[in-house]
Length: 178
Image (tube, rainbow, N blue to C red):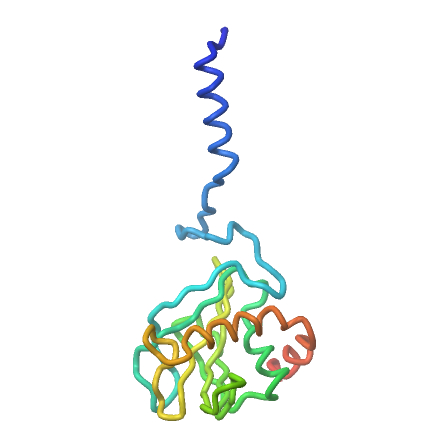
């Protein structure tokens, strides 16, 4: 069989398209944008989703920042542990297959802001892997909702915390298992 110039062009375009845009991996029927690649001390992408709060005195439904494609679902928790010490309380989070959410209270997170925050963080490791965080001010208001003051700064703060989690993750893991 002989290929015409048009056939060669079509075949070249077809191969280029397939090579430059690999399909999303399907895991348990869900699309995995991470394509099976999980990053140590980094994340692939971030999203805000609605979630159920486990922190008393806060709205029932809150904004949850998820940092996807992480190697360890507790990177944010490890970063907070390294900076502020042990968490104030732990709560089961049934929405995430009985994973534990760790809660820190009265934290000053941003250098030019005197607001004290309550931070709940955990993660999910299963058909995908992400680290999650909820943030509330001292009045119990959701600080990750789209119109919240410092929302973008807080999201960047936790992204940087994941990238800086290279130190003492073993100490966090030891404390978490106790």
